[in-house]
Amino acid sequence: MTFEGNGDSSFKRPPETNPHYHGNAVRTIFIVGAGVLLVAESIGVALPLSAFGAVVAAVILAVAGGITNPLQTWTHWANELIAIIGVIVFGTSAVQHYRSGAVFDLSFAFIEGIAFLSLVALYFTTRTIRFLMLRPQLK
Image 1 (cartoon, rainbow, N blue to C red):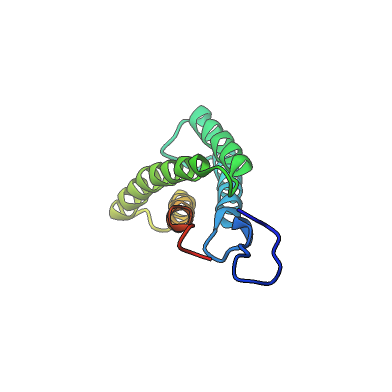
Image 2 (tube, rainbow, N blue to C red; image 1 turned 90 degrees about the vertical axis):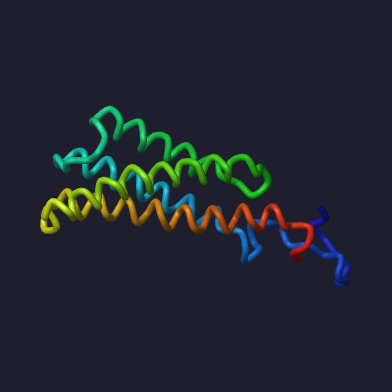
């Protein structure tokens, strides 16, 4: 892949400047999610994880965000798996809190927020993987 061109149609943009690449957004979402997890655990929110699990999850999110790059496709597949786990764990917990009538509980707000962040990360990661798989056709 060339990053320089002479003005003809053979010029290809670097992946990170392509509008179909969303790795930077996923990185930001993961770092925000890690921070929210740590704050929630620190103030006593009833997360569906132990204190150790919340810290490990925050570390995993931070590392995943840090290694995300447009040249290594495997990082996006790892992000996809992390986002899927986040949606399932926190989405299920949010639904259980809602059904139990704890809608005005601070725990519900944090858990729902983390579930939403995971869902948005899942969407952007899926779009990025689609772009990376179709990269030869997209210019």
